[in-house]
Image (cartoon, rainbow, N blue to C red; front, side):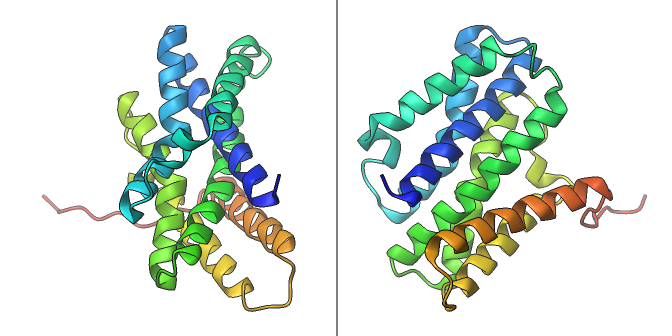
Length: 203
């Protein structure tokens, strides 16, 4: 099992827990929790694979992704009271998934010999589209469309990942640095309430 594959499974599980926590908070039934967890975990990767013509999409070719989602969902349901600090837990797992999936999508773009900017966009979509689908299904405004720094963290992280490819760092170190970069950006943004400007038409 390669580190790349391990990260993919980790990101899938993290996003599944993120989705399950949102669904639990919305008081969905177990089936609803599973659906939201599933959509959150594979949404971004599915969009990515469709765009690059990867068929069948990744999770359909490897049952381990489905197992990771099922196990993560069950764990979230069983431990829902112990991880009842939903906002903190949701932020934690969502941020982990964000960091991991940014790397996954960007590296797949590199493997497909796509332009660096397209690879960065692919990494950002992989990391954020599952959350968009989750929020829409739960009748929430997706985080990516709000002021909170979210997609920006993915773009910066993906750019760092691309730049580090041209250094002497080992690939595992590059993975770690990229994930830490994205997590730190999110932590700092939330801690100091940093956000992008919004635009509105004056009355």
